[in-house]
Length: 46
Length: 545
Image (cartoon, rainbow over all chains, first blue to last red; front, side, top):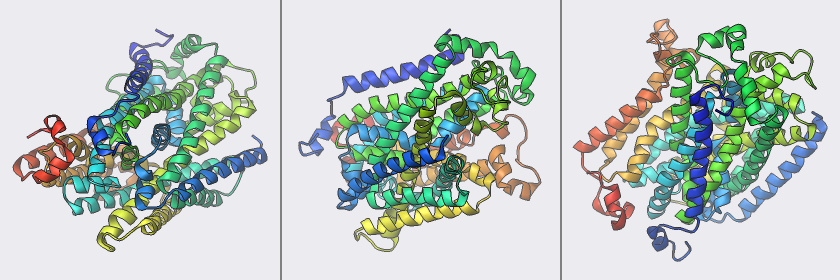
């Protein structure tokens, strides 16, 4: 796969991209979300 | 590379750094500004600063060179850096660190743990661990930066060491964490640009992603033929994992994937950044930015390091005499640290050389500034103010601590033998992970953790780590020499795989065990303190006893 010689290295290659995608989706979905306790503690700043 | 042209480029870059440091200085009016950047840092600045502090020159040049020698198995480390160092750190550690840190009015990692467990002595102990071990790591980064300046500008090494330390010292001392984080954001951006350009250029030079990988895969038979030592250590090719249960397999899995990958969670200079943002919203945004940063920096370095073999072996265009037809590690004269610099100097157009030189300089300076700041705040804020000056303010005491910490690192850079200095990173990571990680997790998630349990865990973590480093793990025990002095052998247990198993593999579980066992038998922290740390809505999640 991808010209790589071993499934484990191909998996590492894909896992890097997948991990970034998870972080990107998480960050995008929660872009404006703040925890309840943050809002309480920030005097309206959060 | 033209040294004069690079000197001018570096001077312009230093002026930008000076301006950002001055901005930090002007905006620093109290110790919260100096230690936590006023708890109001922009998520982009926070993410880039976290990444730039996380990724040093050794991660790019050192591990990139190891990828050139041993191949792309190292991509599991960059996966750990993203999955654990960013996602787990920001989502599971960052939010609670920020909230609890603010509730307890903590300004540093030692203060955070000390207040969470209602123990000023614990704050002093953690500050002492940082004070003793962090300058070792700082001196490694400092020496790396000075060596780089020495080679690029052809200047005397000692002058380079002083110059490099002085530049970082000025903006850390005066700008505080605001200055450090503003400068880090600039440096992080340069690092992403430089390493992304390197990755794209490398794939382009080698015919595309799949074609480059295929060429590298086809070179696997050369390992046995040309690299007998690496083959004996388990190296089977640059696009396959090492042989299971071989020397290189144990090094990759235990020291790099687990030791470095998990150890990053417990580094005080990274943990303190979670307390610099206004709310968890900023951390959510920073998760996205930080992950992209890590992929484009270390991910690029590891891929490029491995692919440099194809370039050196096959390409005959523009290659310096004596390099073409060789494997990367052969071309670098057997020194993995030279693989990436050599590849860059041979493969890239000259304009990218300057960008990449600034990239390496940025990686070293950003990590070093974070280490100096944390060491200084531990000395000034946590140790001196606690032991000598009580609760008196402050910025000047912390600044004095920063200067003192820088001087210690500088002296270590001058006087310690290279063998010990080179192992400084491993010692720092090993001790931090075993000493702080169980305590840090318990501080965030376990109401039942007691101060006695945390003392037992930290004591076990530090003790077992040091025992492993001095007596079991060959790389450190041979360099430190104490085991050989006492027993005549470089390590106590020579049976494979023990000389190659990272000390964190056994010190971390033992530290967790000590925490759980002692906490179960001792009195929990006072209820009002727990109520402050774990508000009612979150109590169920934190309940553990």
